[in-house]
Picture 1 (cartoon, rainbow, N blue to C red):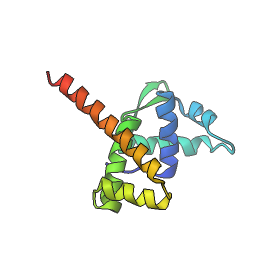
Picture 2: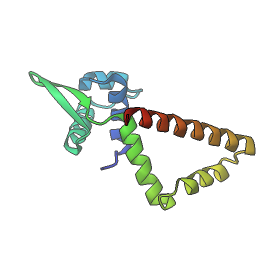
Picture 3: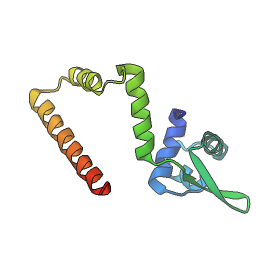
Picture 4: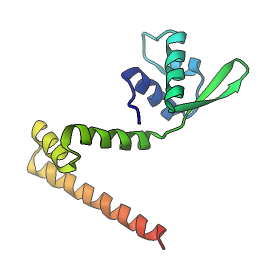
Amino acid sequence: MKELTKAEEQVMQLLWKKEKAFVKELIEMMPEPKPAYNTVSTIVRILEKKGFVAYEAFGKTHHYFPLISKKEYTRRYMKSFMKGYFSNSFKEMVSFFAREDNMSIADLEELLKEVGEDLENNQSKDNETSR
């Protein structure tokens, strides 16, 4: 999967939030100074070519919507990030950020507890769907 540039990600964040939007609506949601219409239109067309968005045509205008969810993009991006920087090791990644952020033992224990609960919930859901 291709990664998003900063500008593409900004547009995708807006589309994920709004779910469907015309270019004009995307521009209205952007902070000042607002980019030119042609700039945003070009970014959206690039996203379409990359397979991130599609559109419904209304005459000469297009109503754009995401083809990939924010959760799915995040999952793929993080897997690629871990592979590229941490030898595909979640443990190495967490260890790096724990050191960089000077996490306390209590923070690490809280993180482990939350991850454990998430894993248990996912396993419960998997067991229910496999029945």
